Length: 352
Image 1 (cartoon, rainbow, N blue to C red):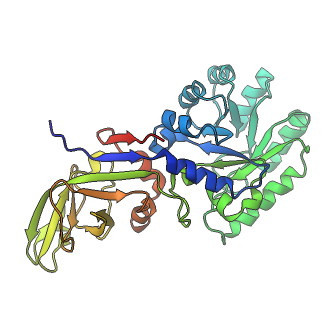
Image 2: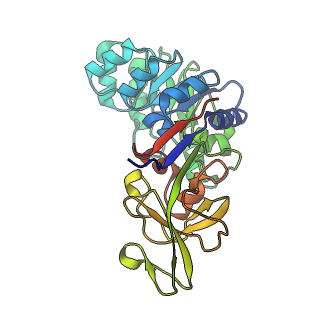
């Protein structure tokens, strides 16, 4: 058994710093919900909750099983962001005091049949066209069943990362026009990470922030990547001008080169589609992927690295080298890369 391991290091202090930064952007009356679905975007949910529970007001997850496990370690508000789809799941959600999103008639029928209107968030489609009631359909439900109830009105922005997208103002207008037709005791929530950064005036009663707390938001350098993904060099070779590297010979040497083979491939969760020229770090120097990613290894151009040897770490991303550098160059998203890292990569969670 080899002692060599690809490592994923998780730093909760950076997560805390990112949250504090994001909270500084919103109005003081707004509450902060940390979205920690999919095992906290791969950051180990139970550990993250333990280390941020004192600085957030609630959590959002998607799967009921994850919400139940979360309830065992936190007394804060827990929002099941896609709600429930059966009577059995509804009973479980009430048992564990979960807040439920209601986004279609099927879900509302479950609520109505149980005559249970506590801790509900009604999701409205304002332009994402994915989940949520159409506004007129919701108004029918509101006028017949909800006018005397307390709940949260929510929607989701489709292009909040792009401050100049006209869809933002269109969605804000639809959301505000609807909210004016409802009782003043209805809470409101529309802000995700992009909204907090670009439109903090729309933080309303709750913000729901996911990727930003883990440093995967593009366009803001204040928030650092909370993960370091690194793997050791296992081989170094010299190749001559005209020689090819990797499957299909995609990478062709234009001059004599020095190539390092790094102990991580697509079986570890690295995207097979990473392009030649993707910038990584070895010994704090920039290096470039050269050749197709293989199942177990990746080949790197280290021609210009003066002092490099087997066992040295190659960093794919880190707090000092944002995950967005890698994903943007390859037309990927940070969400995908964070959650795709496989179990054979050693995860190390740093103590605060």
